[in-house]
Image (cartoon, rainbow, N blue to C red; front, side, top):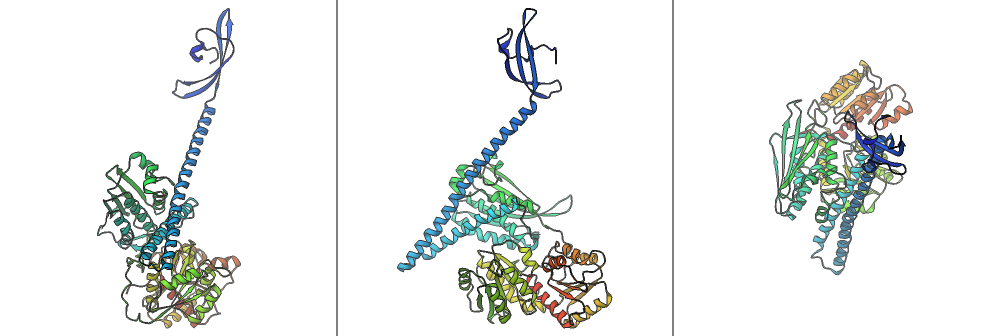
Amino acid sequence: MIGTGAAPFLPPALHPETAEGITRYERDLTLADGTGISLELVAAPFLAEGKPAWQVVAHNITARKQTEEALRQAKEWAEEANRTKSRFLANMSHELRTLLTTIIGYADLITISVQSGEFDRVASDIARVRDAGKHLLAIINDLLDLSKIEAGRMEIHGKRFSVRALAEEVIASMRVFAQKRNNDLTLNIDPTVEMMHSDDMRVRQILYNLLHNACKFTENGAVTLDIARVVSDDDHAAHLVFTISDTGIGMTADQIASLFREFTQADSSTTRKYGGTGLGLALSRRLAHLLGGEITVTSQPGVGTTFVVTLPEHLVLAAAPEPTPVDATPISATPPAPEPGEHTRRLVLLIDDDPAVRDLLLRMLERPDLHIETAVDGASGLELARLLTPDLIILDILMPEMDGWTVLRELKASNDTAAIPVILLTIADDREHGMLLGAAEMIHKPADLDRLDQRIRTLIRGRSAQVEAANRQILIVEDDETVRQYLRRTLERECEDWVIMEVTDGQTALEHCTTAMPDVIVLDLMIPGIDGLQFIEALRTLPDGCSTPIIVVIAQDLTADERERLCHSVTRILYKGSFHCHEFAREVRAAIATYAQLYPLEV
């Protein structure tokens, strides 16, 4: 550009005569190839052959301008994020303080009513306290779940469950709220929809959030949940489509654009009128993504909104049908009719260091066919378990000195207590660890008492019958033929109805488990192909594989690292030549009893 005429680069104010001094300015130009650049120019007047002229020096500042623009946008984004955070904290503070005011205020009114003997309004006041407490717990759970997803610590646990049972349970829990808003709540399920393999708790959470949202923004209208099954033409994979439609206030396109952002709602007027924290929809979409699905939305202001949740029918494709879980039937508010043999009084041991929890469960679970003993710490709980051999144990995890994990490990390590089903009560979220150690169920605090009562009934009712049920399958993984024959004959003598299967290497054993998961695996670590430790790691990734009991039978000494890895993954370690056949049979029977509580046979 040296020697080029300066006129195109000069500001119009400087044409056509010179001005005193040097002028600095910026100019955006478009090159011949269409690329835009930014120039910083310095124009200096001078006389050339007695005539006024300009000397212009241009500096390409395109990169600097782009950096400045990026910084400006980042500043705007940061300011918007700060405003969003402030709005969220204000909304959250409002929600929490409102709920806590309700809880504390009505608790005071209940106290006054009891002291004065005015009991006519106590029941309704307690219901308000309970509703506010549940709402508060839902907000806290949403916050914790979102933080887990952000940290990459959200775990998905696949199991097989009845879609109808789950949907009916969600609809039943939403019925009262819908009636308060004078809404008709309807469930329609296509006959082709039956079982689903996914994380039932997360599917339930998604449906609950979307139905609650629909009922909240609809009044004197209708909310409908339609469930259908769709098979893809490309890969023939089946998906379940959950459609939640309402006749509520609807949304504009701009409102939909920000709908799934964390900590935001459609607009501030919506927050003021309807409340909420802006977490539910964002969390639901994140959960749907974790389950391999998606959520879409269509809406029209004043007409209504439709959310469509599409989830794969099988989170993990299994080659063989899985056993139907015991909780595949909807929870009913009415206790089931007593079955034959239930008139016998059953013994439940409750181990919890919190006196309030012990008192609450003692009162809530009190009934003629149940007797509950309590222990205030892990050590006394273990002693009572060995002394009383109860029909069921309810165990808290977070206890001083000896925590619940240690207690559970000790219970499952003893022949006297290994077969006792254990329900874990905890605020922790480590379901896989609990199942690896042999727990029959994990229920989060504060406990859903209806669910807890149902699980107690199911586990107690099924304990004795399930252990003796025929066709329990035992897989022996051992490459030494002599040892295999010894183990087989021992088990056949113990129970002639057990189905004993044998394989000689880890890969074949893994393929067998992929096809049909056995009730117990007897495993040698020194086997051809993939070794025992690699087999265990692979097994725990299969559907139901995380709960299958493993009895390790080995000849070699274990290193400290190997022992540490095994102690969290297997039920028992037996050394060849050091145990009697009766001891081996007892270990297998105890393992079957534990697994039977998790996956009862259909009878």
